[in-house]
Length: 100
Image 1 (cartoon, helix red, strand yellow):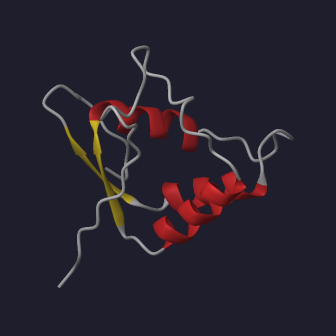
Image 2 (cartoon, rainbow, N blue to C red):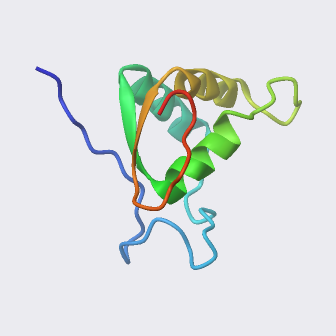
């Protein structure tokens, strides 16, 4: 039997993004990226709402590993993310990528 595990960023007021959709309140440092790489490497798939799905795909699927500003940990996560099955829960999303 498979497990469903919840992993969510949320601020103390219960929101994930600020009113403009930004995630700047959540500092993404090497420690967090190492944790995310280990955590998501062990998962077969990921469940998203529409907004977070679109943000992840826009960023991680298009990350340029040749960009000198991109870290090795980010390149590792992008590879993990690109190989994951993505389940999107949305009533308004009309199109998904090949992994969803």
